[in-house]
Length: 90
Image (cartoon, rainbow, N blue to C red; front, side, top):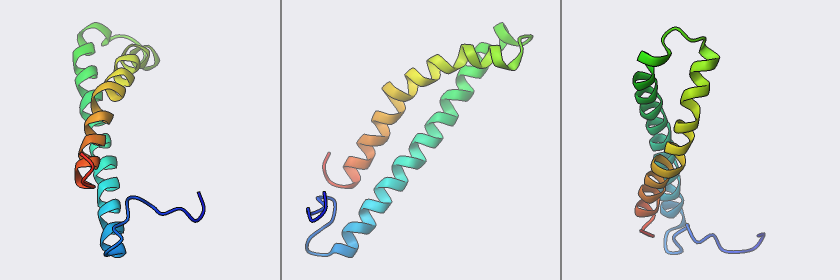
C-alpha cells in the first residue's frame, strides 16, 4: 500500500537494503531459469526413446505436465528458500 514501510529495506541503510533485495530477486530469477532448463532437458532426455518419432506438439504435450509439477514443487520452493535466506528471513 502507499505510505507503508517496505519490510525488505534496511532502515539503517536503505541503499544497502535495496541492493540486497535486488540481489535476492536476481538470484531467484536465475535459479528458476537454470532449474527450468535442467528439468526440461532431463524430461526431454527421458522421454526421447518413447517419443522420438512423434511431432513436436505431441512431445511437448507429454513433457509439459511433469515440467510444471517439477517447477511448482521443486524448483520454485528451492529458489524462494535461497531468496529468503539472502534477505535473512530463512
